[in-house]
Image 1 (cartoon, rainbow, N blue to C red):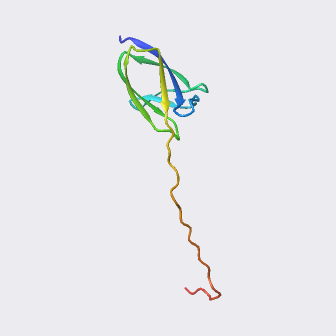
Image 2 (cartoon, helix red, strand yellow):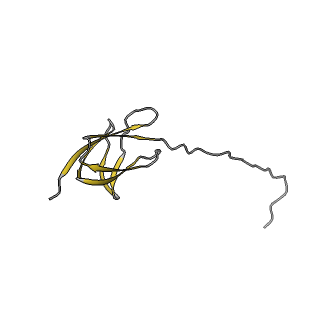
Image 3 (tube, rainbow, N blue to C red):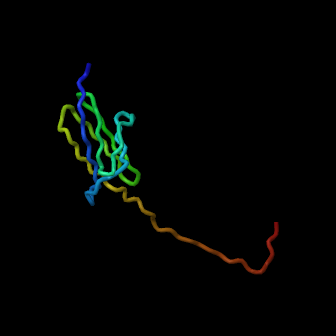
Length: 102
């Protein structure tokens, strides 16, 4: 039987340091937890090297690997994606009074 460790994760915005709610915490494409309104999630993990991924729409995905046992609280800061619209050109035309033929 492998030892298990509880890990508390706190996820914040990298610029504002505000807690991020609804961040998905996963390992090897398996959902583990979702952060609450305080940016916290608690997961139980097996000892050893554990890959973790953090996802939230509008933020860059964050990947890390922990070797457990480790600290009981892990702080993660996610960076916002800076995808904006590039320049858009709108072209319009008008019709004259001539009829349209097939």
